Amino acid sequence: MIQFFYENLQESVNTDYQKWLEDIILSEEKKLGEISYIFCNDEYLLKINQDYLQHDYYTDIITFDYVKGKTISGEIFVSLQRISDNASTLSKNYEEELRRVLAHGILHLCGYKDKTEEEEKGMRGKEDFYLAKYNN
Image (cartoon, rainbow, N blue to C red; front, side, top):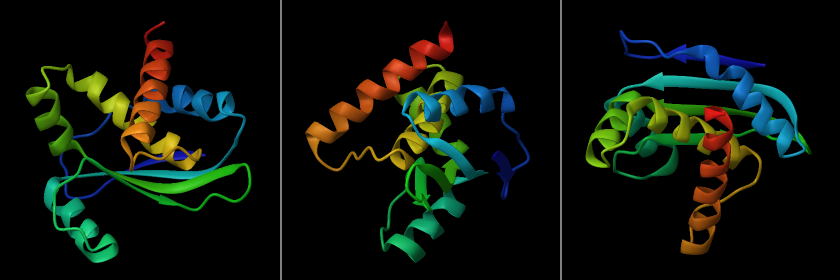
């Protein structure tokens, strides 16, 4: 089950993405467990980054992986403020940038990494692939 929660926000997110996100999991030959998306602002996510990862910088997403075997579970924290800023900086549509980040979290849970340049290129390719599927 995929659930959506909000922390320190007045805005909400279109939850029509749930089926698309489930399709990503199935396409990656995984099973859906319990996934929580927690939408928040920059300061909330910065605190999580500092407290749990010892990183002192803003980010658009942090994924906590609770995967067991092929069953995908986790908590995915998403800063809507950072997504909005990134969309503006990159001259992208906000909804497309949001979908990219939502898919990014799922792909992490499916085992994809993005620490090296090569891993990041692979992750970006997967994101583009699934974004194109959403738009069809």
